[in-house]
Length: 594
Image 1 (tube, rainbow, N blue to C red):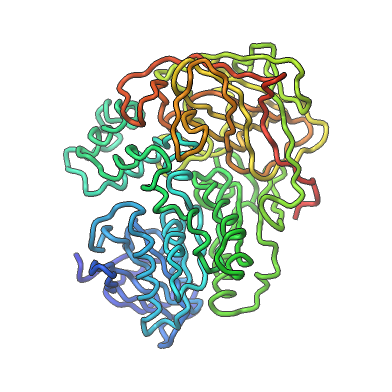
Image 2 (cartoon, rainbow, N blue to C red):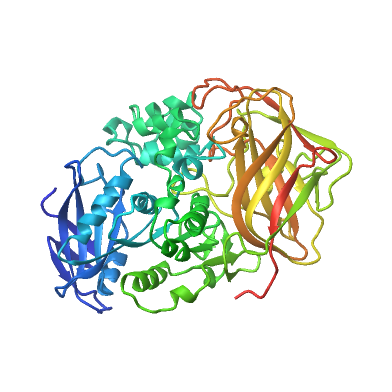
């Protein structure tokens, strides 16, 4: 129904345009204007709810654009709170979603549409012309996209838990397709159109072949949408078709356009969030490449021990009450400083705040990577039997003088299953610091463990793996995890990374392998901040699958999504001597934590 909307909020039912003073917490009465039309440059109309202080006037304005439905989103409370603090809030459905007109193609129109919405908001009688942006996940990506167009009335932005390169830190990681998330979000939750009734299922009545754990095994991958959506989902097929970082992806990459972004930004994310690298790259991109001195000096970042948003506990680990940051308070401080000119000390703070796992405390930093970081290689070693936690894999800061090799079989019909890590949002796999021991018992997981630590070791920043490896086919995957092993044996993952071997020379090019040739790979892992305590051990796990978080590499060398068959691969990891495989750790001083 397009003409009158209703929603239930804090025990009251509101219809049409509404005035409201929040029951039990009256600060300033507000009004909500429903179904405001925003005409874009191509004539398409978006529709928004506008939250305003009740008193007439011109207010600094916060723009939020969602693909999840203005009337269905769970964030009304924050919009009310912003209005009570003297802000106008424009909360709009993006093109082609819910009440807004047009065709929705994820990511493709958000830059120019964002520009138009910002400039529309600045011209409204309720706005003083100073615009900020807010929102997380897809709503955060929308901010980066709009910033790339340098809207003249935009003053600042607060993108949270968001990707900055849709290809490299959303759709893939190291070129490996994020299957469970891309399918769950792109086909099941966000198809181009509403699924037909015959494809509606509940968990209790889902046919066996359509259960998530089974449908993700369907081959060829490019036709998986037909199994649940019942039709070809265009954007899902486009993602598979464009398997490398080509112009399709570069044209919408925020990381290609930091030098066009002119305003201060504040990112936030979680060490176990699926978009962690977007959070980090967003801060670093603006700090180093922002288009103006204000943009570079104004870059801020917070990372907690979270998944896709702040929490105290995640993945079965309780990080203590200080972990759960009230992000609204931080956002309000940021907007007060930039949009209202309130001297609240934001500019005096260090730009980076990191939560250090292992001791469960926050510390502010001057930058990221942290100034003074020393990068140290932790080398793999074994006597040729590092298979599983029962094997003889070792880690040492001393490079082994003699070479060695560990071998395992990767069978994509029996992949290593996803267990925790950087995942998200309703997919059939868990996320976070889940104990890795169940998968470390497998023979197709190589396990390398250090001696017990005598003193704390503080690791914070970007992590890379230098890996010398071979496979007997034209392509395969290398999956790496950095693990903190507790005295009781609990194996808590703190960082992970994957590389599809065909992308070893860059994500923008594919080059198949010569079977059985040893290559040197550089694998980027997610950033972290973790204190490995005395009595703990450091561990590196290596395998070739992490399913269904990532699609199974069929080892055939065929383009992504085309293979209907799977082949078994024989893998060799080389270390020591002339092939010193190692994980490169960023070590920082273990100073007093605040």
